[in-house]
Image 1: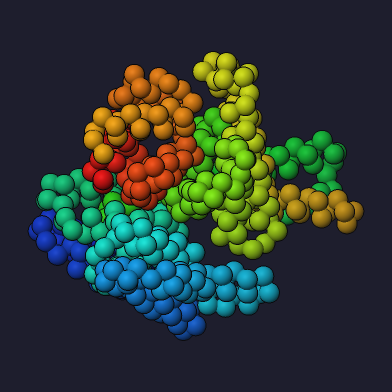
Image 2 (image 1 turned 90 degrees about the vertical axis):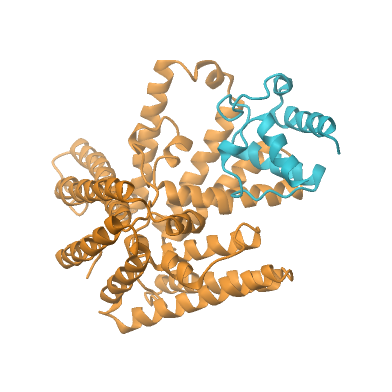
Length: 395
Length: 81
């Protein structure tokens, strides 16, 4: 069963939402039912492959042991950085082993959702170390980590926000409001993914031969492909995200949104505040900010700008690697890191930008340039550019 | 450290990072909306607070809305001193 795609998933989801709605209206028991529903969904998700199920179980055991060992160390006052670092390394290890082995077509320790659950587990560990999480029940942690609605495709929720939802079951009227919004989001997400993404995919023809009537036609076809892929990726991924939000709402979990009109972005920083928001804010909080704090404390860089530019490149390189250790994804990460660094330098240094940044014509121009850079990035992400280069080299 | 001394030190610290003395006068404006702080400068503020007052504030500890003006930053430090 594939989440948010298979007919069997939607039938099971509908069957699980009915009792959830009853518990929600009753005013109690939503959390317990949510945990049971999550376990049922995961059983279906991993039942087709014993290897995947074992990898998932191993990861959950490692992450849970690490989180609670670190929590105990912080609670007792020992605050052992060794315990924290070992836990962090062990939690990251399955994802790293999987991504590296995937380069050699081995997919060791792989299971659906490994990228997302790893980021959630790492967030918990870092916030225990920061002293922000000082109490947590094992079952709440497990529910957060393995919540079915967001396990395969995000959005990446935060544990303290998730557990706040668990503490306070909504009142009957609040739940009904949440349920109706949830069902609407499921519907809109399904339309995005099943209708709009399918239409874009229908016209997207990456494998069509480059032997075309003219060079101009070939170039136009490739440009059209790049735009169609961008539309497909947005509607497909935003559709998944909306459906995940909708399913979460039905179980009383207000999962954060992942997209906010990304094609209205007026610069690259603005784009990353609108595209895959929960990933970019996760990276901002746990990579970018930590890197800047580390570098500022040690005065690694002579200027604020060089610190910011390096932090952007590191941040986005990790984003690319998180997608996969392939030339396409790594290039995509470095490309966006470079663009963000260039945007930062331009906006800080250019008097032209400072003079005109509020002007309407400047914002329209900036939007247009941003969109071309974004589409070019997706052509890297999809492998379209690599294919073109390979075809040109090979004649 | 008394409140006046804390306020003066925070204003000096912010004036330095924001590179604008206006922070002393406009103590309730949103520093991010006003373009005086961004997420990078926000981290520099956290590091400076740690170095000057020994108060550690983790990057995800406080929502931006709770620490976006001079007075709110002073309050967050005062709570922890």
